Length: 337
Image (tube, rainbow, N blue to C red; front, side, top):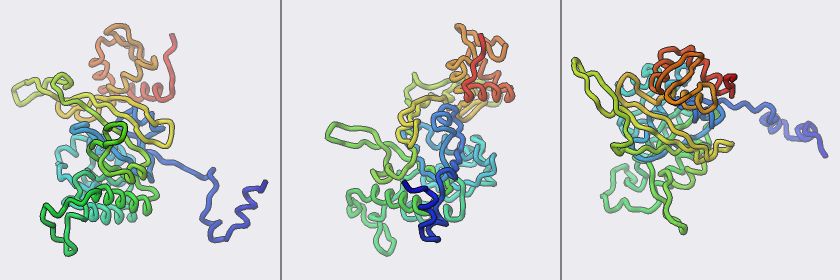
């Protein structure tokens, strides 16, 4: 056997200077607005990686990405959004806690090549988080003439050009990236195989290979699946749909999170907007015994509360109590009988 230090000593000095022992490896992760997803991924999304957020319409893919940016900004991180869909609004960013004064916004990006060129420049400039929302609307090079003019519609039907372009974009990002967390939002498509059909993200096989983590988000828009609540409109009080449950699955990860599933509620109107991480915390706390439940009654830090909704309200109004329970849940601590 050869000692590792002997091997290092025999290498070209230039190469040896670049190499590191694995003991020097440090992984920085970005916590997410979902407690369950953060826990499943060992602390959140890893900086220096590409993450695909994909799923059906209105499964709150962008909400997850924006709230992740908001949490990162509180830690002093920088962020940029390539707004390919052109759907962002100041009101929505504010509602989700994003600091617009510390956010680079790149509108009017329509092509894969433009998103790639501008994304590479942002990564090389040291941006901490880069979000592309979404890759599904970007046009491949086959839509354009050499002079940049758009082709006639019937001349744009080259098979596989979109997937090839997105794969090249992900490859370019992978080449220049060391420390940036890249979030790619994608819609769902159907892959046809010998054994049948299956849902998969748009972007092709190469993009799927280059993404370190992939999270599938699903939500039903049926009436029975909606969360209704009371909203105040001036002097009127009206009942309307204010949210819905979202299911998540880590369908790719280089670690134990692979295949882990969970759910949380999202709210788009009312007193609270965003991913209901407090409600999610209550469910996990009951599951691991940090909060005791007997029928409709809950015991929260020696307080008796009736109804899950009231428990959520109690914790949302008491951040210190909420933090205490979260530490116990993440630490696996259970209350003694």
